[in-house]
Length: 289
Image 1 (cartoon, helix red, strand yellow):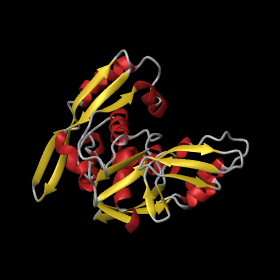
Image 2 (cartoon, one colour):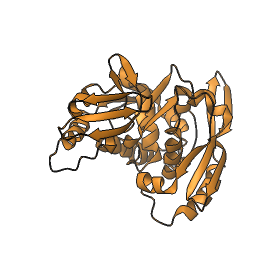
Image 3 (cartoon, one colour):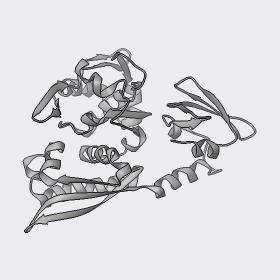
């Protein structure tokens, strides 16, 4: 499943726990950011969260309290010069106990940052985010995806700390480096499609600026593709769901279903309505955007 977000949303200021962050991204992945015209009510099943977020059985009761806390955590979006907007993420979160599911509706003011996006946005696969244990790792991943094609991104240390909304104890660069940067560096290298190396620029003895060198994680992609062709592994293609590819000049969005056939070929169905036949998974991956 893919997540698409406007640049302003990526660079917004907010403070969330890892579970809250993944809940929101899971909800965003339900949107069709290019084609939906209105923010609808989206369903998130607890069983789905258990699978994606590794929430233990019986913890849906805690999630009701979690939803209440989430409604009290605003997002601040800078809109130019010194202008800004403040929103809640959701206008409503409803928990349906008998069906063990959430019904969520995003705050209407967030619509320009979530729907009908034509430029200034990033798209990434949710599978890269779910294994990350630190909210700061998720945020840094998003911030770097925005600049992936440029291969680097600069931040003033205080600027990055403000975006990430780190606590006072992390204002010390030593703590910030150990608790935020080093953790993100390790987690992105292990789990994501990009990773970074860091360079520090000093003013006197103080680290004032950071240069993130952004690299494609080819080792991870090679490992994932090798696993697909492991004869001993079951033919489970769920890790491909959500990917986009370009077939016959058309962009097919959000792979939904892969049906393996007896001759080793596969049929693929996409959210955008297209259905295509491929001789192998390798042929499909060669068309991946």
